[in-house]
Image (cartoon, rainbow, N blue to C red; front, side, top):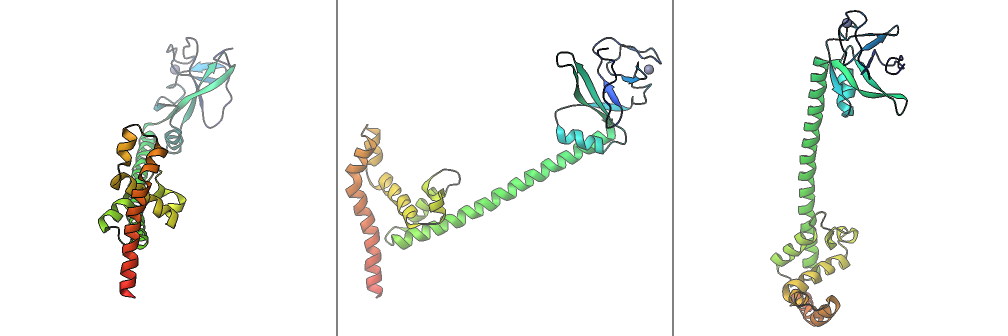
Length: 235
Ligand SMILES: [Zn+2]
């Protein structure tokens, strides 16, 4: 029985990869790599009028589906799994032109996906620039004494996509004052104080922060106060 029981048929002729050596009942050709069971007897693909089809192994679902759509005649190829006691799908036989058209459709899809990725990246880049500009403007509003270039550097650093930095957090996106101040404080810590040197020399983070907190406060006060001076001067 194994390998020659008539497998359940659906979706066109069913083609079997035989487990044992089989010969065609009609032309006596063989042993057959693939056969069709007709009336309990094996037939080669040529005798079964399937000789013009090409084998597409399973694995690429979209290509398989489209190859069958593009083929007037197609067949499912199965092999009996003795251990599991059932037929398992190995692939399909499809028309060569159908396979070619299906490959073109899949390539077109891949190209469309690639173009969409490029468009998305471009749109994100524009969003990033706008976000960084808004972030910099907010820094300048809160810290009028902060140099323009510095505000831009802090903002672009804080808004690097996917970095997980403060600017990309929900609060940063909303440009909350807390998020903007955090980004500025982080920058001052690293640029205007010996914070990094302290960390490198083995000072614990909390101790390093304690040692530089006065310096950080002084820089921030300076940047804020210039704003007060300017506002008073204008008023
Ligand atoms: Zn034959």
